[in-house]
Image 1 (cartoon, rainbow, N blue to C red):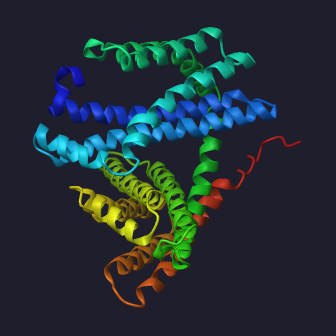
Image 2 (cartoon, rainbow, N blue to C red):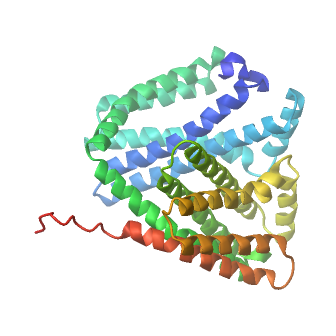
Image 3 (cartoon, one colour):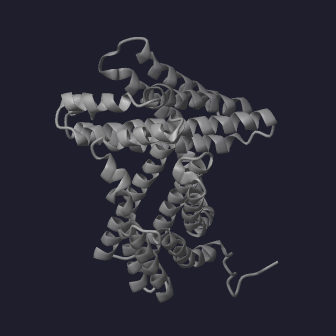
Length: 394
């Protein structure tokens, strides 16, 4: 898409290409997780290698994804190539951004793929051909750093070789999942169940840590609080997907459910991005004055304030409420659950709108109502299914 008109920021090729790369980056993280799961090394050194590779690979994929999101923001916020370069340069000049997001992070991702592939081949859990193809693909991609290749053909060739390496693995996984759907359903139930129970806990956990020094930038409270919030938002995203799965409507109802889920997930993505930006600010500064200055510099970037700190992070309430109302109409949740969710949203809105000494007291009650609404749904998912009446039990 970049070759067909996207180069230089031309639309729509630029935007479509970077959206594709965002999805690609997330998929690379999933690949790293799957290769880690396949390792199953019983030696201490092997476990450390597998775990370290997983952590570095996911971080590298996150850096690559962040790079694509930055480019998308730059593209949406500017009207011409000159403005794009100016805004992009402003972001690149932020401490650590160029080295972490553009130089080191993505390289680590691809180096980790080589390490994971060779590790699996050495254990006999992958073929030598698989490890060879992954290694060649990464080396071909890296050739562009040493030799000027027209049209970035090395990148295309590298992607094709990786596809040839991963295709048999992916087909094997698809065959396995289709032959054992019950296992996949059980795994999702456990993940969704704990997400429904723990998502509100993450919210109140971060809020509590900020009350004990985090608001003043004190460490480690502030960093831990934002990390807890980050995990909480990821769990809430999983919870929203589970609520969407329960709708199972048709026609306009299903369209509404999809729109509601999309709004919630987009907003939660903005919330996750806000936490990542705040963690970056905390790590890149040494005192409260520097923290405020860098925070203001980031907020001054076009679109950053409303997306990361304004309506972008608050739209989750709208999508979440729409899903809950649909479930109540379809009688898939109780009136009590709906009432608790409405109370939660009313308290959250009051927390956002009010400004005074009593404002902070609303948050614990809002989170409590949210937990009382979602936790029973989670417990039911975690509770083992009762055997059928005619089932033979040992």
